[in-house]
Image (cartoon, rainbow, N blue to C red; front, side, top):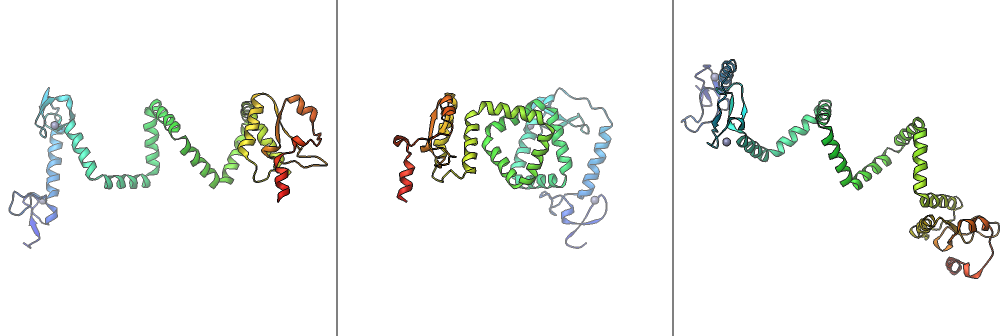
Length: 287
Ligand SMILES: [Zn+2]
Ligand SMILES: [Zn+2]
């Protein structure tokens, strides 16, 4: 027999050291028989036991914590003499926790790899798990959405930016298939956000005329539209954006709030009044 070969007493073959379980009790440092034979023996034992109908006792002593516990605190095992596992549930939980802690990196990478290689199976498993407890999952998802609104919005914005062409196509298709629904939603939003509608309409008009200088303070301009909407009044350009004589700018200093009727009657008329000349006229002359 060579130095690194050991003889298995059960199968009668010479095998390498790692084909045996380690055991310091023996001078050889290995336990008889070989691993394959041990597995074979255990399988035979299980087969012979699982055919019997075991009588489950009322209590059992856990072979790990040595405490006598109720039978229902042990997991079931068809191939054991009493139909129960030898370690109690809390001992098994504790050892699995310990095992997980010691091998967490490997378990995580194994799980990740398995998921990557079995995407369909994993998706199906997730779907099944969700459908079994739909209420709980809906609640969880709702809570997650509420707690992470900024993160989710940022993710969608990024995604839409990167997939702009696709997104526009999807949106176009959705709108053409749900025209009535979209119109209704848009009408509701415009009713609720009159200040924003007016603000964006004016901004669009001003942009078209290139009347918004870079120093215009959008926050102050927005506040004009908000206030006007609140008091059901309108925002007016003191010096009109479109006029044959003058060309006003879409800036905070060229805005005033007028009652709805006053703005309508003023229309696009403009008289030069010193107190109405906005500050930026002087600023511009200085440049
Ligand atoms: Zn063997
Ligand atoms: Zn125990």
